[in-house]
Image (tube, rainbow, N blue to C red; front, top):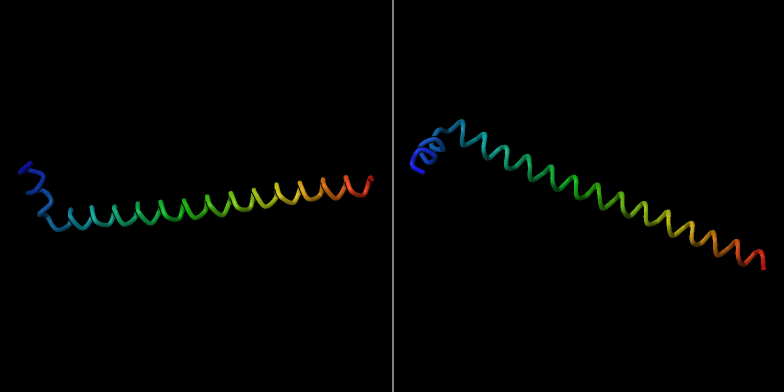
Length: 61
């Protein structure tokens, strides 16, 4: 445990670790946002196809 603390006292290593944590955090946020947008688009397309099917059924009657 003491060697880990001594290792983190090196400024370049500490900066690298902080940078990696920030990078991973932003990357995860962007991936989640893109997935949410993708699912919203897919659900919107499914909703439109259901509406089209209902319109077709009404026009046949």
